[in-house]
Length: 338
Ligand SMILES: Cc1ncc(COP(=O)(O)O)c(C=O)c1O
Image (cartoon, rainbow, N blue to C red; front, side, top):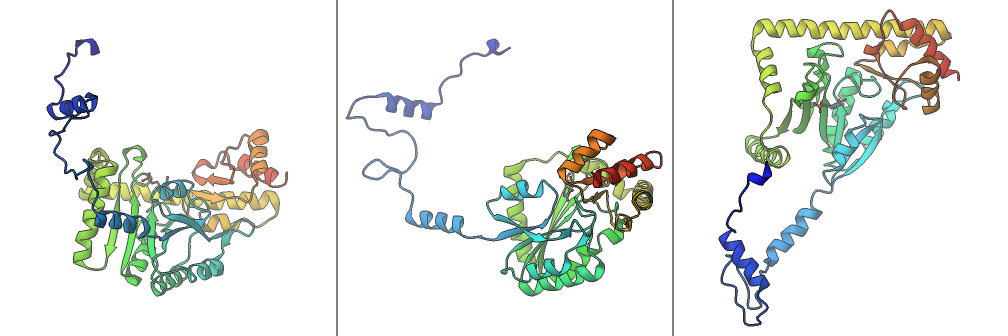
C-alpha cells in the first residue's frame, strides 16, 4: 500500500533551513525562518520567561496523601503529576477496622494545601468505610487545616445505595471551600472499557470556577484531546429517561444487596469453620474485603484450594456464591492456619 505514495515537495521554509545548515560557507546568512535572532545569530529566551519557568517548576510543592492501603493504581497515577505521594494510616489488617485515631492525628499534622485522597465509599482494597461520625471528624480536620480533599467515588450504589454512598461527598462539600471529586461510571454502569466518569471541582467562587475549568480543559486537550462519547451517551440516556433510570437503580440495588448478603453468608461460614469472629466482613461495604493473609498464605489458598486472589489478600465478595461458600470458607481458614 505504501508504494502508492509519491514524494511530496519539501516544506518551503524548512527546506531553506536544511539548505542553510548544509552550506559550509562561512559567509552564509539565514534570512529564512521567522524567529528573532540577536547579533550572534542566537534566539534568546527573555530573562522573565526563565524566571517564570523556575517559579512554575518550584511552585506547587504540595504532597498528595493516599490511604494505607489504597487502590493499587492510585500511586502510579498520582505519581506522574510531579507531586510527592505519601500515605496516611488507614487500615488495621490484623484487627480489621480503621486506625481512626492515627488517621486523624496524621491529617491534623499536615501543612495547608496537602491533597488528601479519600475513598468516598466501598474502600478499595479493604471494604472498610468510615462511619458518618468519623466522616464528620475528618471533614472538620480537613477544613481546619486547609487541606484539599480529593474524593474518589468509584462504587456509588454498590455499598448501601446511590444516596447513602454519596453522603460523605455531601458532608465534605459542606465543610470545605474547595474540593475535587472523581466519579467513575465503570462499575455502577458496567461500562469499564468505555472510560466514562467525571471530575467535579468545587472552587469557592464563580471566577475561580471559570479559571479551574480552563485549566481542566487544557489538561484534557493534552491528555485525550477529544473524549470518546459512547459511554457518556449511554449514561446520559439511562439517567435522563425515567423508565431506564428506574430500571438501572433497581438492578444496582439488587447488586448491592446481593453483595451484602454474600458478605453475611461468608462471615457466618468463616466463623462456623474457625470458631473465630468474622462479622467484620459483614459490616464492610463494596466488592472487596482484605483478609489477614500473607502472600505465602495466598499462594497456599491457590495451590491447595484453587482460590485465586491478589497477594495482599483482597477478595472480591461477588466471586462468592451460595454454591461455593462452604469450599471458599474451608479453603480460606486452611490458608489462615497454614
Ligand atoms: C478506588 C478506585 N478508583 C478508581 C477506579 C477506576 O475508575 P475508572 O475505571 O473510571 O478509571 C477504581 C477501579 O478500578 C477504583 O477502585
